[in-house]
Image (cartoon, rainbow, N blue to C red; front, side, top):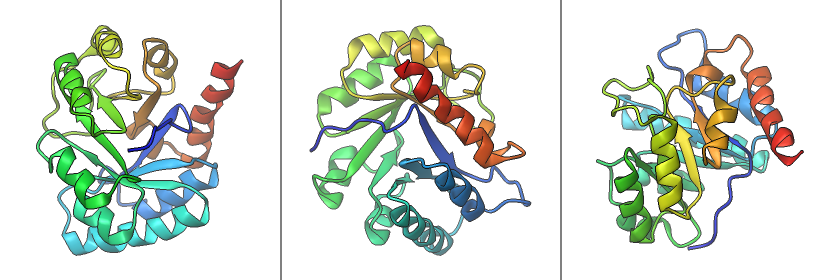
Length: 214
């Protein structure tokens, strides 16, 4: 397993959230046009064939842009389309099994929802990075876990050394305080994909990189 560093403070997630006026591919292309180098494809409750076809199309575009595509939940689809890795929830395939299937060079992320879960996942020694949240109340999950807040994030940061991406209700207005609380990156769905101009909103988030560097 190789060391992992988030290329940006934003980890954008491709998901239409049920919006019919935009496709996953449109959103992916808008994100990639900004120069992002890591993004995740999330497709909940859709047929596997549809997921595979979409993942293949996004993977082709990601490779052309020099970006790494992470597939949400589905290790099998990540393997099939040659994606850079997979992001696993607590009820998905165990991280060790995903690592065995995808190999040592793959990026494996694991969602955690309490500081205790984060510590347990880190001790397993398989994941390249951990997701942590929800930080704030979120509307992108049907049955969200309890809100952890900035205090929970700080506790998780103190407990682990792995790169940590915070998720859950994060917006451009709150991203800086989340990063200041210890997150290496923020995973964002709604505040990006529901924006009038997805490309412009991603660019605004990417400006946080320059602010942190300064």
